[in-house]
Each structure stands twice: as structure tokens, then as C-alpha cells.
Amino acid sequence: MSFFKEELIRLQKSSLLRSLKTVNPLPSGHATVNGRDVILLCSNNYLGLSDHPALKAASIEAINSYGSGSGASRLVSGNLALHEQLETSIARFKGTESAILFNSGYAANTGTIQALVGRGDTIYSDRLNHASIVDGAILSRARLVRYPHNDHKTLRELLEQDKNTGRRLIITDGIFSMDGDIAPLKELAEIKRDFNTLLMVDDAHATGVMGNHGRGSADLLGVTRDVDIQMGTLGKGLGSCGAYVAGSRELTDYLKNCSRSFIFSTSLPPAALAASIAAIDISTSSEGEHLRAALESNRALFAGLLEKAGLNTMGSCTQILPVMVGGAKETMEFSKVLLEDGVFVQGIRPPTVPSGSCRLRCTVMANHEENDLRFAAAKIIASARKLGVIN
Ligand SMILES: *Cc1c(COP(=O)(O)O)cnc(C)c1O
Image (cartoon, rainbow, N blue to C red; front, side):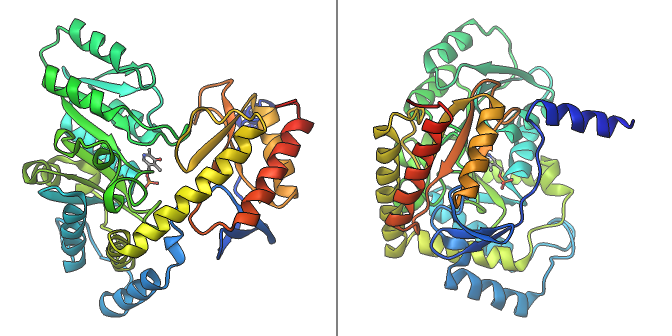
């Protein structure tokens, strides 16, 4: 037997085997999954922008003008006017001097962290940070210290005890991707000032969603000036794809020279760039305000229904609403039953979350209809009772 097969069998036995579903997103927060119409409760397209007419029109026009691919990495011949326009637009949106694009959030985190720190330096990373941050830390060869989730007091103690002379980087998700809670950025900014460290925030889930005009978590908590490196993605709330790092001109010039995922990868295609520019225009307009208000009222409705039934949503106060289950087997059974009931929610298992904390991860969108959210909540509550998750 090949080791591939052995490993697949091992994963299957521990309920950790992953497989792909064929999904076709539909309007109003629906989708077809393997051919069936269901309520889509596991997309990060929070504002519903991915099929917005303005984004689609901008993409089509960009393809007609510039073609389908950029043809090279930015530093070779793949630096189109659209890349520069989008970077200017992101810097204005974020209120920073400059911004630099990456092909994905994964590439932004690995490429940025690897460029900022190295041997002899230390990364202080929240224990629940995204996998791409952990991978960037490993790539960098810096010492990695994972502090307890959102525990800024322990982080301060760790820094007080730190006698190393190298650079120090504190890094946190803005909104945590699997728990839906928000990082204590005010406290982290104070620590950053007291210990003269760098501070980096990953706003994959807050971009377009949180803060004034959807600028993100640092804006929401009033610490934009303290966050040296504001990373965010264009593929979630903004409905396109790719990612950015926003900060000083020196930072982005440095990354253009030292970030390997920026240097050694073909740049984003015209369609994605034009869609992102259109998405930022919407996020900063009154339509953006309406979408965020709709998202918030959907979130409040859905969270209220789950919590009233006694489900543990882990203190989330955002559009990411986990429903704690525990074991992998029950979680996957829960998700399977819901899909049969017409509700598409993914179960989340290790290595995405720590073992024993498997959960459903529900994500609410601005374009969900109230009756659909009520229907989905009722199905989740009924299944939770049947499976013994609640009484
Ligand atoms: C999704 C996500 C990423 C990766 O972004 P992609 O653009 O999907 O590669 C990075 N960080 C966090 C917190 C995420 O949730």
C-alpha cells in the first residue's frame, strides 16, 4: 500500500479526511452544492460583492483592454497601470502612505513575515493566528513565541522577560478567522510602544466590513498609526482576489526588494485588479454603508437566534459565528445533516482549529434574507438537539 493511501485511510478513520464540493454561488446568499439549491452559510463574500454588477463590468472591461493575464512578475514586465492604480486606491482607503499588492493573503503573510524578521529575531504571534502567519514565521527562521489567545497581559510579561537583542514583531489577526472575535489592538499598540516592537495586523476578515468605510480593525479601534504593517485581503469582504500590505513608503519599497512571494510570482491579472478597484469604490460609498448595516442586522438576528437556543458561539461579535461542537466526528455529522436540510455550513477540524474544539463556522452575509436566516437557525438548533450538542 502506498503511503498516500495509508495516510488517507488514517485521516478517514479520525474523521479528518477533506474532500471538495462543487459549489455554484447564487444571488441572495444561496448556492447550488453538488447540484442542489441551499442556503450558503460558509462564504467569506460578506458583502455579496463578488457578483455585484459594478465589479463584473469592471472586470470585463479590463479583460477587453488588457487581456487575461499580466504575463510576468511585477519586477519583470507584469507591472500594469492597474496594479499601481489599485495600490494607490488601497493606500487612500487605508489612510496610509503606501500599499503593496500580493497574489493572495497566504502569499502576503508568508512573504512579508519572511522579509521582516530572520535568525536572531523574535515573532510574538497569537496562538489562534491564521496558518499563513505560522508558515511565514517558520519560513523566516526567527524564534516563534505563540502567546495565549488575546492575552495581552501575558504578552507583556513575555516581552519583559525577553533579553534577546534582535528585532521583535507582534502579529495578530484583526478578526480571528475561526472564532470571530476581535484582537485587543489598543492594548497591543501600547505594548508595541512600550517595548519598541513592530506590530502587524491581518485584516483578512475585517477589510470592507469593519471600521469607517470598511477600513478594518485598526480604524475601528483607533490605532491606525500604531500598526506598522496592515495586511488585508481582497478576496473576502471585497469580493475579488489578492491581498495587500499597507504602511509607510519605506515598508512597501523594502517589501518590493525583499519579499520573495512578491518577487518570484506572476502578478495579479487585470480582471481581479479592476474588480478590486470597483469594490473599494463601493466600500467607501454610501452603498458600502448600507451593505455593512445589512450585514450587522443579519449578524445580530442570526447570533441572537443561536444564542437564545443555548448554542455556544464562543463570544463572537462579528459576522463569523462559530457553533462549538467538540469532536471531529460529531462536527462532520452535524454539517452533513444540515446540508441534507438545505443549509451549507462547513465543519472546522484540526489542523485548522485545536483538537477537541471542532465547530461549525457559520458566516453571515449582507445579502442573506431574513426568512432564510431564520430557517437556517431553526435547522441548526434542531440538529444540535438531535446530536446532543444542546439539550
Ligand atoms: C483567508 C485568510 C488568509 C489568506 O488569504 P487568501 O487571500 O485567501 O490567501 C490570511 N489570513 C487570514 C486571517 C485569513 O482568514
